Every structure is written in C-alpha cells, then in structure tokens.
Image: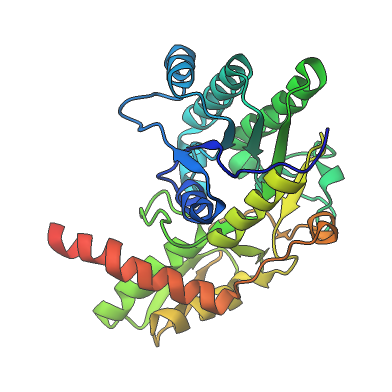
Length: 320
C-alpha cells in the first residue's frame, strides 16, 4: 500500500479523546485541516460492538486513531487484572471490526512499550515482541494489547485493511491521571512532591530502589509521532515512538522535585517492586523516516506541573 496518506478534509475519529493520548491527538490534529469526531463515553460504550457499529454507520469516519484503553500503573494492573484484559480486548475487537464494516480508510492501533518482554534487549527493537516472558506486574494489559496488534495485522493480511500499530514508550504530560492509586510514575511523583511541598514534609516515599531506568516521552510529542506515521507509514510491522534515551528513577525523582519546587529528599522503599529493570526503545525505524521527539524532560515536566496546578490542584482545593 502507498504509505502517503492525507488527513486533509477527512473525518478523523479519535477514540478515547478524553484520555492522555486522545486529548493530545485532538490538540495535534487541529492543524491538519480535518474534521475531528469523537464518541462520548456516555453515548457509546466502546466495549459493545453493536453500539460502536451503529455510531460508525451514522458518523462514517474515514480515519481512526484508537487511543481508548484501560490503563494504569503497577497497583491498578495487579488488583484489577480482569478489567485490564477484558476491557482492552473488547475495545480493540469492537473498533477494528466496526472500522472494517464501515470502510474506514486507515486505522492506527496503539500498543505500549510495556508489552515487550521483561528482559528484552536494550534499546528494545520492534522485533523483540513475543520473544520472551512479559513483566508480571502488567501482563494482563500486555496480553490484551499484543492481541490488538495481531488483530490489526490479521485484518491487513485477510481483508487488505490499511491498519498500522505503534509502540509509544512511557508517556506523561497534560491530561495525565493523577489518581493516587492508578497513576503512572510521573503523575504519581508530581502529586507526592506537590503535597510534600505544601505540608513542608522532609521527604517523599518512592517505590523501589531508584535504580530502574525509564524512557519518558511528552504526550504531545507522542501524538505528533502518531500523526506522522498515519500520514507516512503503511505496513504490518509495529513502529516504536520514543526519545531513545532513558533515566534512572532516582534522577527522575530529582527532576520532578525541581519542577515542583520541593526541597525535600526521596526515601526509596526497597520492599516495593521496581517493575521492569530498564526500558528504552530503539527509535531508529521512525528516525530514519524523518521524525524525532522535540520536548526535553525538563520542559515536559514543567508543562505538566503547570497543567496540574491549573486543573487538578484547583479541583482538589474546591472539593476540600
């Protein structure tokens, strides 16, 4: 298939438009001269094929970004495994099949770098998928997302559908989930540092040893990479989206504290799990196509904390 695809004058559905990635995609697509359509959760349950198919028959989107998913950190994955595998399988199956029936021109499926094997080679090449055991702390989510990628590949092979899959690394940014028990590492650390600053606490507790390494990508960069691939890529193989650089969690904690303006020190609770020891993706494939991330970790954390102060912290004060 021709990898060149235009979004100009197209009706583009961002599934999961209220989430971290979906809202970033909506922001990014504003400059593409396309019509952005959304399916509000209260109107369409994406786990229900009948509802998805009816909505797509009525709206007729021409391109789809499937950013809707059940997501969360280590605690959420370990305590709600049935929701993570069921909901993600159901969402992907419903949207992919409804897209085929509605004649969607192009669809982008989102994987995640956390679905690579726990001990994958570093940086992780796309070919590492399914070459080893998964990280136990998120295997339910990982199995579902792998199934979604394979679903897209199968539809490409059998039906000739122009469906592509991307593998973004750890994402953070505007619109993140700051729920204490469900958030990922960056929003969890921002919340802890912010509350410690207000309380004048001498230290914050951090899970693990601080030695695990993570690659972090600002979500608006991720959205830009996805739009780039939608317009310039058409093949069965998955494509990593990341910075190609990682940092120890201990360094990330210091960077978050600096962004928040918290002067205390971290206390690493070594009885808690580190998760995957290291995770950084090989971005050579997308780099060779001409795309690179632009937002530094320092700038991204500053933008995220500013959004937190204007949106999340103000809500917490109103509730209190």
